[in-house]
Image (cartoon, rainbow over all chains, first blue to last red; front, side, top):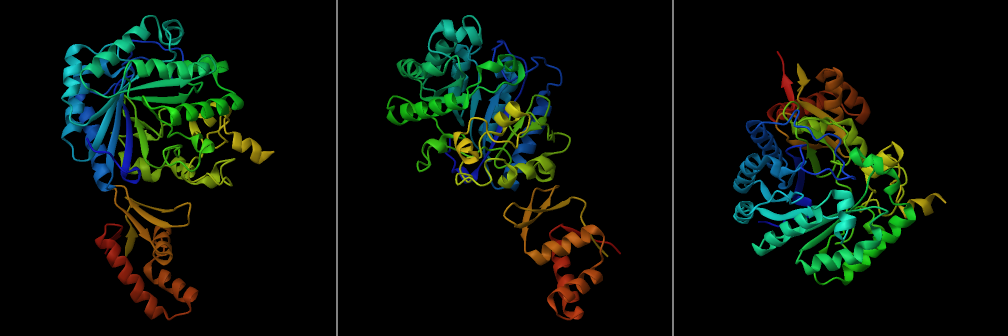
Length: 343
Length: 87
């Protein structure tokens, strides 16, 4: 597995299915159907197109293979990991899963993957009661069990927590739990009221809560020695602009694309604006010819960011702006700097 | 007669940089302002003579000189697949 310098990387989040064995209350999916799902030969064509683009752009690919639940298509998943393992255009890949379907055969198979960086599972709270209220009965136990088996096999595991009003106060306890279970990496995302999660609109953090949460994650992350706390997300630059491991530009339009189960391409999974279909238009047309992508590449088009000194580092989350205001070029509603700018 | 290839898109970046992108191969080329304006004029349907005359007026040099420069630029662009030459 090769670590990639940020400027050399292009990231694909690849959803190979919409089907899922769980129904998390905050999920960004709207449909859990297999309708439009690509066949294995079509998935292989998708990868050929991705590989062609990576080589033309002289970039190294990083991938997240996910769904839905990717282990719902175990055979196709492994066919793709074999492809990624053998491609010199690929630096590494992660598998984003709920972990419930990972059996002992899977653990062995994953251990043999040459370019698998980590398996990412999700927890929403450090207790079964609170986690399962969001992710479904029994999911806390199955997720930790999957983690423990993956860790016992020497695999790297990350846990993702989607932060909302109901779980923002459990961050510290969550890190303690993950450290006890040997989790390598803790990542957080803000809850965005989209997909099935649109029903939980009041779970979205306020700007003040978001600020407190970002500052808390930063404080915990800097102090933490037991596991790595990822902070390369938009808005973290507001907490510490001088630390290069903190904060990251929204990748929309710059170095990432999401490919859905039917080949539809989005700028980001959380920003479901269709740019085209990878098997019909191809990536070059999508990347070079999308008016949306050209507009979002220009920080002058993003309200609240155009005059901000942090514009090379941040630009907020376009998906959060989209679902909070209906305008993805609006300010990130959680940006406390934008508030002070407009005051 | 030169034409911009239908597989080519011209764009200005947010920083004012000028680019040509090939949709068929993914190759991209950073252009100087004159090359960009020449290809943009070609895309609008101008022929190389009128482009050369326009550039001559803009830069205050002879049309003979700009005709040579435009021919040379477009020939290079043909080699790069950005422009097609039609008889």
